[in-house]
Structures are given as structure tokens and as C-alpha cells.
Amino acid sequence: MNTKQVDKSHYDFRKYVDQLRWASLWHQLTELIELNPGRVLEVGPGPGLFKAAAGAVGVCVETLDLDPELRPDHVASIFEMPFEDGEFDVVCAFQVLEHLPLKKSLEAFREMARVAERSVILSLPNAAKRFPVSIHIPRFGFFRFSIPKPRIKAPKHEFDGEHYWEIGKEGYSEKEVISRFCSIEGVQLIRNYRVPENPYHHMFILKVS
Image (cartoon, rainbow, N blue to C red; front, top):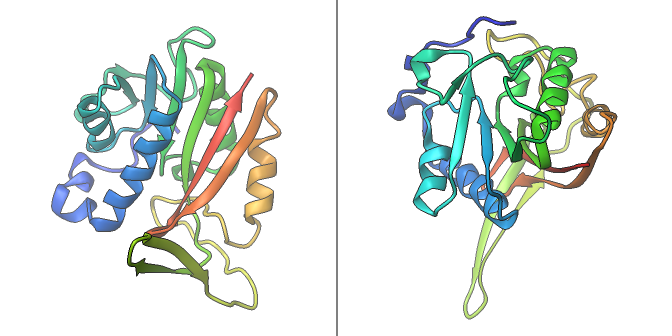
């Protein structure tokens, strides 16, 4: 699991970034700002949009990736980060851990929690379909939420060359995934939610002690 999975061209702006991903970026950045962090680490920076956006609002983000072509600040494995315990206030990984088998994802998350002093922010794919809805009420503004699509049972997940698992697939219920990640010692789930504009992205804010 110490080889890159996708080529740098995967992150071409015209193919990788759409309006839904921009919406998720807004939520990621908002969650980070609310934590008022000092030193921040992003694991798996992709095209570097999160780091750039955070820098624009005065939050310095360092990045880590195995692939030097992505020009991360630190070239290293997610399983063996070259940092001391609690070296960063916040550690983030957005749509990253599903690129590893769940057992390896938990190992990577444990390492993220080790180098985080206060919090870990995750975004994971949730395949349980929801329909985004936006309503504008004069004087009150926009209200955004999503409506679940009824289904009889969860579908099985088939590895597509990138994702080994997704929340909402058979054997990976939201409850089960949360239980597995929160079984890591010192980790507490503070809140989680589906991004209203992009319900495929499921946000998790976790406290580390």
C-alpha cells in the first residue's frame, strides 16, 4: 500500500473539480476555521485546492503524500509519518481513506490521530443516495438539506481501481464505520453530516485526546 494509486493527471481541474466538489471544499474549510488551529496537516492533498483556499484566509496548511509529483510539503507514507506525537493541532484527510482497504484505513487513521494534538477532520464517500434540496425563503435566506432515496438493501461494493469501500455499501453501514473509527483509543466523534449540496461526501469531526 505504499505505491500511488492514481496519476497526477487524475486531478486535472476540468475533470476533477466540479461545483459539488467546490461545495464540499467550503464545508471542509469552514470546519477547519472553527477549530482556530495553529499547525495543520492535510494528508492526500490532490490538486492542492484545500491548502490554497486555507492560505487565502490565513490558515497555513502543510501537506503529506507519497507521490512527489503532487509536490507535497512532506513526501512520506500515511502509515509512518515523520512527525512527533501531537505535532499538529489538526490533521485532515478528504476523500482519501477509502482508497485503502478498511483495515489499512484504520491503521492510517490511527497514525493521523497520533500526530494530531486536538482534532481530525475526515471526508468519506457515502453511497447511500440522497437528493439535495435548496429552498430560498425571502428574509430568511437559503435552506439546504437532502432527502434519502428509499432502498431495500445496501448494494455490495466492487473495487473500481480506486475505492476499496464506501459508507452505505453492504458491510460498511454508517454505524459500523463510525464504530470502527471511534474504537481507536483517544478518539471521540464530535459530529458528522452529509454535505447538503454534495451528499456523497460525508464529513466527520473527531476530537483527539
